[in-house]
Length: 262
Ligand code: MLT
Image (cartoon, rainbow, N blue to C red; front, top):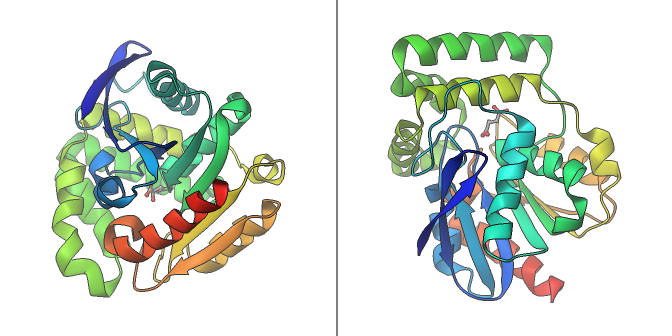
C-alpha cells in the first residue's frame, strides 16, 4: 500500500507492507524507496515502512532551499506520527543513516533500535566538500543522468554491476534537480556524529558490503565500536548498496536482528 503523508509543506510517498514491529527504511543518495523492495517483500515479522525523502520519486519536490538535515529527520517523525507509531526500528543506508543520526539528536525517544547500512559518522573532509560542490554544478548543468554516471563506478560490487546498475540509474532519475542540489548541500554541511553514536543506548545492527568503497568495512567496524553493544556484519559480494545487491544475505541478518528484539 502507498500512502501520501503531509510533512513540512510537502507530501511524502510512503510504502507499507506487513504487520508487527514497525521498521522505517530510509534510502541513500541518490536512490529512492524502491531500494528496499526486497526487504519489504520478504521481512515477514515486521511492519515495513519505506518513504521517499522530499525531492525524490513520489514525494513533493520543493525548491533547493527547503532541505536540511533537521527537516529530513522531522519528515521521518511526520511519517511515524501519521501512522500512529511511537517507537520504531530505524533502518538507514548511507545518507539515510546521516538522517537517522540527526533524528537521534532531535527525537531519541522515537528510536527502539537501529540498522545502519553502509554509512559512517564522519563529516565531509575539505576535499569531499569540494566534490559536493562540483557534483552540484553537474546536477544543475547536466541533470540526474550525469550525476549518477559520476557516482556509479564506486557504488556496486563488480559481481552485481550488470544486474543492479540499471535499477540504480532508474532511482536517480526519480530525483528532482532541486532535490539533488538540496541534498548535496545537506551532505556537505552535515556534522560529525561520533559523539551522538557514543551516546546510543538502543540495540544496533551495523551492515556493510565487503566491496563498499564509499564506507568500507573498516569504517563500519570502527563505527560499530562507538555504539555500546552494536553488532557488525560484512555482507559478502556487495558494494555500497548491500540491501539491493545481496538481498538474501541482508534479509537474513536483518530478520535475525528483528527476532532478537522480540
Ligand atoms: C549515499 O549513498 O547516501 C551517499 O553515498 C552518501 C554520501 O555521499 O556521503
